[in-house]
Length: 116
Length: 118
Image 1 (cartoon, rainbow over the protein chains, first blue to last red):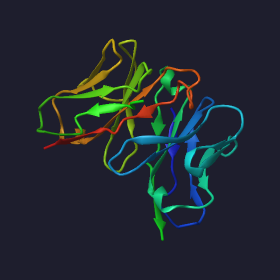
Image 2: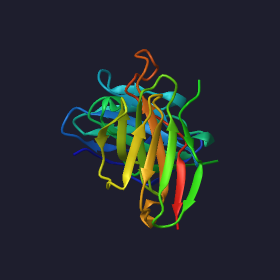
Image 3: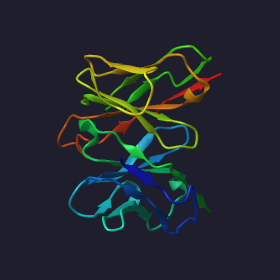
Image 4: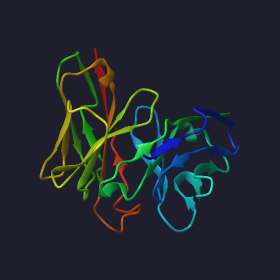
C-alpha cells in the first residue's frame, strides 16, 4: 500500500526566507508524486507533479520539488517566501496516472505560516 | 473555462439522514473522483467514476455510493449519516486533452461541500 508522510504539521518562516516542506513516500511501484496547496475554505490547487524524467520539477508560483528515489523523498522548496504563500500544503502519491483509475494518497498536510 | 463546481457549498444534516452532493467536472474531463477531508487531515479517496461506472473504491462503507451521468457530472450519496461523516467532501475531475498543461491524468479539485452532521 502507498503512504505519504509529511514531516512537520506546522512550518513558520519569515517573509523572504527559504521555504522547505518535507515529504516522504512509500510505494511498491514507481510513483507519481504531487504537491497541492489549499487556501482556507477552498479546494486543492496543483502546484507541481513528477511522473518520469527530470527529477527536479518546477511548478507554479516559484515552487519546485526534487524526486530522490534513494531517499523516497519529494520535498517542496521555494527560495523566497511571500505572505501569499501562507496556506496548507499536501503531498500526494499515486502509482500511475491518477485520472486513469488510480487514487491519490495524501499526507496529513503542512500548514505554512509566513511572518512579516 | 469553468473549473470543477460542487453544490451545495454547505449542508447541515442530523444523524440517520441521507445526503446527496453534486459535482460538475471541468470542461472536457470525463473522470470524476470523490474525496473526504476530515478536519485537520488530508483528503481520503472514496471512489472514482469513469464511463458511468465505479472504477476504483477506497476504504469506505457501502453507505457511500455514487453515480455518474452521461454528461460526466456526478453525485455522491451518503445514507444513515453518522457524526463522523462530518467533513469537507471534495470532487476532482481529470481526463480530456492530451496537450493540457498538466496532462490528462492530473486531478483538478472543486471547492468542496462542507457537511456537518449533528
